Length: 421
Ligand SMILES: Cc1cc2nc3c(=O)[nH]c(=O)nc-3n(C[C@H](O)[C@H](O)[C@H](O)COP(=O)(O)OP(=O)(O)OC[C@H]3O[C@@H](n4cnc5c(N)ncnc54)[C@H](O)[C@@H]3O)c2cc1C
Image (cartoon, rainbow, N blue to C red; front, side, top):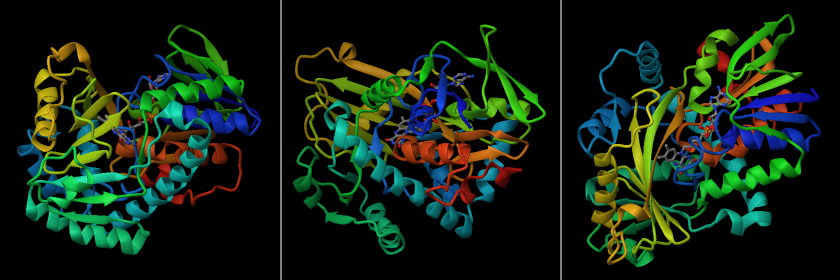
């Protein structure tokens, strides 16, 4: 396959285009808006091999219901008429068995581990321009019961996946991260996790695409596919342009499912909406990224700024950023951090960047990286959910390998789209 079109300029599409170009393909990348302005922009930037467990698993429904009522509704599924969401929820429920949880964990681990190594290589050349940091990730608890309850999951992650995990009881956690208040129940630290500035990662990827000769077409939304005898033959843009190639990779994030009908397969990916607020010049300066587990709120230290992110809303393709959601994020940060989040004397608002994004959620928590049974020249690369930054380069590498009929570097079986058909 010499000539490939990639649809979608998020972390997955950009890495895929890069892998393909480095393998000698002529690549065109079509992006409806601007490169890296979808979910890959304002997220928390965790490169977290620790995120092995999918959301679906034994007890997930009970946990989800608890999340919907507590933590200010960190998870919400407003009742509304959306058949694709209800079908997705039924599939999610089906994957809440112990066996599915184990399979999902193994599939995620393979990609997370591969991507962590790919980031190490990439950061060797570009560490400063990515704000690449290897301070690990701390899961912080106020509730002693929940802190203790995590011990069995930690033990399982160490035993089955060889993860290194350090336990810090009580005020030991605020000794390790002095930006934390005292009086917390404790924290679990994953020293092999890392983080970066996702917006800067996307800028760096853009530069690499240019350097490798990828033709990047922004403001070019794909709206129609033309199927031929040999598979997909042509793509039409919303401005009436048509594009042909030997192969196509569809990496349109949460919107990939919009193409399911025309591609003749089920793509059960829905948008899991999340929010972040980035406070420039924040007074509080942690060094370790942290998840405040009682509220499901994540904080990421960036150069000169603090990003706070969270929430999983199944509200369709909605981009609004309600004030009260941002206030909930800030409230959680204030409950855990010693210093105020705004610097003294700042008005606050103008220092803040508020954002929402759509995680591409698959019902079993496993990405979809798969050539299509009915159109072998098309590969899907989506469904990375909450770990798209962490998995991005590996998801993309596998997609490129499948397109090029190369030996895949991870077993492709768990990521096949046919599991839903
Ligand atoms: C609040 C929040 C925090 C998060 N934190 C983390 C984290 O710390 N670590 C982590 O690993 N993940 C995190 N995630 C998840 C991560 O952001 C996503 O998994 C990842 O960005 C998905 O990348 P993508 O390339 O699949 O999708 P996107 O980045 O959304 O890219 C898809 C692109 O396709 C384009 N597109 C769509 N339709 C068309 C079309 N018809 N034609 C042309 N182009 C089209 C879109 O414009 C978009 O640019 C977080 C997400 C949120 C919301």
